[in-house]
Length: 586
Image (cartoon, rainbow, N blue to C red):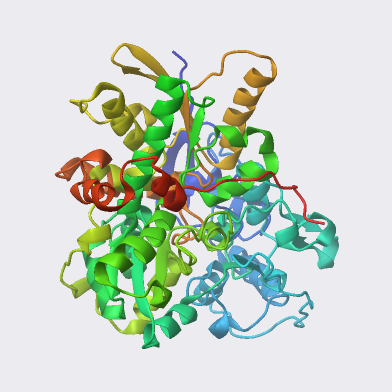
């Protein structure tokens, strides 16, 4: 067993002890000393880019950057004195001299790290000439807006795009004072390898990268007397939206959200979890056909993630045959709203507008895909909002969200099993699918439906599940760099004619799965991801029905309308297809 080496030092007169390798910044936080930063994010390696976190070592005039300097034995560190504070102020003033002053109309107003730290330092005057570069805004993706003149060159977006996601859509171009973020070659973001996952926007400290806001479009639809507006909420939204209203992280606000959405004016409130249960029946059906009946290649790759689909089509077009054709849950709910629901309620589907509240920026792209996303004769989902957009709508509406009574969803497309709710966490889709796949193979439910081996934030989770004596090898990957590891492993086996290493794979583009989605509240960390996931697993554990195939309203839907999983009608409404696409658009 390796021995952990501990380091002892003193910070502002306070003794501290940390493991060897910890930075001064880490050590300071351990003794409740707040050293300001702009470039450091918990997900990313320190870059020392901003220079705000400078500190002194006693008996030395040299200033060190706390984020990237390891603590050493017997260091005596000063984190705040008049000289340090003035130096930090000067760094901030220099950053602000090259930054727009339109805070009131910026999408990050009141939620901007630069704005907050400038307020903390009481900066009220311009000490340096204000020089603002004229760089055009890039709205080409329709999902993420790139506004480079608001960039502070912290490097977070570049780091998460290149190293965290292995997409390489963003980089720094030009040099010196002209340095700016852009896709390589200074092309449009839509023409780059960008998969619209939104992790760049989730990690940006300012308004330089921001989701395409469509809240006004939804307000307009709600005010239109000729439209019937229907809404659905994704699993991960319910455990993150409360962060905008000072709830503890991970608080599950499902029933309060139903009440809120009715107050906003939606005529029907559904739940994407219902669609998750449907997805499980379709995907588990696909898996059993391939695994037990040899009707198709293995492994089956299951995911409800449009950023991953984009990545697949660009990087692994030769492996599309392995991918589940089941639509994502919100697309299924959208298609059924304009068919099954419309028929039962005798509503003209042309009047129905479906709005999805998602933790994801890529869903804005997904709803515009033409590949079978309008099998009802109409676009399945009309608008997709992020959790952040919903928080803004709630605040605009003047509703006392915290004191709303609990309400239920409209059960026709709103009731769900515990399996549906865990879709929001990495491993949740796999766990839910295994519960139903086991039933499909054996004809009986598991005594213990918890598959804890696929839970948690390990980047790649590999395990073997025993199904009545038959081993099923599975893998779960989240974060596209980890997904690449799994896909390359499968590709290598296929190329060399070797047995594939897995039978069933779940992938999610965002670290932590949808709980860490690109449209969730800012400043996510692994601890926050864990708390959000816990909120979902707790709901599953307390659910009366925990397996998707036991959902009564799903059973009723198949009986009345879809016939059975993988039927012709189910394929028509609930499935899609994919196509290989070039990495760069010419």
